[in-house]
Length: 66
Length: 244
Length: 238
Image 1 (cartoon, rainbow over the protein chains, first blue to last red):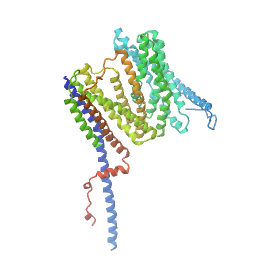
Image 2 (image 1 turned 120 degrees about the horizontal axis):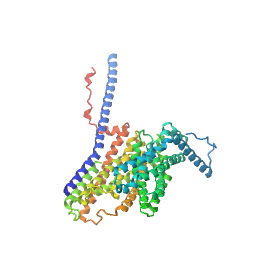
Image 3 (image 1 turned 90 degrees about the vertical axis):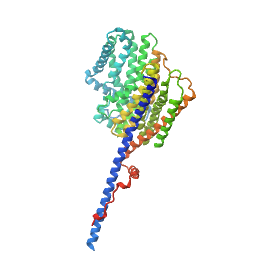
Image 4 (image 1 turned 30 degrees about the vertical axis):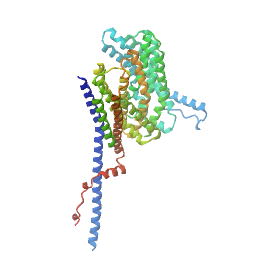
């Protein structure tokens, strides 16, 4: 192996190790964000639904009384 | 762990009383631990058997030529003794942890440090020093000259002292794990490198007929520092462990 | 965090260009000396990160500062990575230069033991189910390690010189300026990389630990695109 090949291999392995350092937290961050955002969307949808249900009930009562 | 009822209900304030109580706790813990270990005397032979086994593997793996064994003989001896010293170290706190003694200890607010000293010293006496019985056989197997015996004995006594107290911290760190043995080894073996190196340095010097004072002093310094400080560290770790 | 990464990238690019293209060939070692532009900064980082970790650990244990616990845990894998880089590049440098991949001298052996110390901290933390207790245990181990590292280094150095004498020394000769500045740049780049990676990992750990808290949800809600929430048609009521 020529000297340059040693140097190139060193840099290649450096890149590999850097990726191994950065990739797991990066992917974990994405996963956490996705999960939390899904939960937020669900909660907002539920809140909206609850609000609409209570609105429809009050409308129904108003409609019935008039 | 059975303790006699405290002699005075009021906290003793004088220095000598505190020291006396401290030593009492140490002795109680020491005697208790030793008694537990002596309950099954055959257990004491396990480390010896393991050390002999490792020496056997070395002797066999190196090959039959005599000049190949001689250079590695002291190394093989000390590695065998080192590894044997680690056997069942993870069990140091295991039984106390399981039956709730550790929790009771932390809750009672009693002095933990003398009890930890008792445990570590008991471990050293039962496991470390019992390995001295294996020394003659190991020296024969690895073809070490008999004149090395005094140096070997002193070196190993100091090394196992350091290892026992190092193991105290390691056991405290891994007390909650069920299969903590491997992790304990992983944590403690790198820290034990200086102990091994200075032990080997002493033996090498003795083999060459030179004074072995320097490495022995370093070895003793490390071991005694561990003797002084490890129980404090272990107490800190256990207090946090049990506090959760 | 992102700024740190970009800066590290730029500095690395400049440093590498300087090291690989501009710097003249070493008259002793030929082209392979260029590996030092990774090897030496990585080696320095591997040790300085351990000290950083121990300092954070001490702060975490003495003053119970939560963020220090997180830094201890997050610094360990990065330090392990740098130690691995040091060892690997050291091996690849040693082979063409001195003919062998490995030698049991003080520096390499101590570096290898350092790798195991890092792995021990990581393994200990991961064995705990209670993350905060695990961080504190890791802090204790880091502190013991940091005291022990000089002792280990000294003992291995003493041991190897006993047997071989000082056969291999790093080229401690004065470096020409054109060789030196890329090295200094790489030092700075490695520190910036560490900062960026630490903050990235700390972010993940914080989110994982605090995901139930309101501030996390608020912070993420800001990033939430409003188009995701579909308005319910009001005609459904009648």
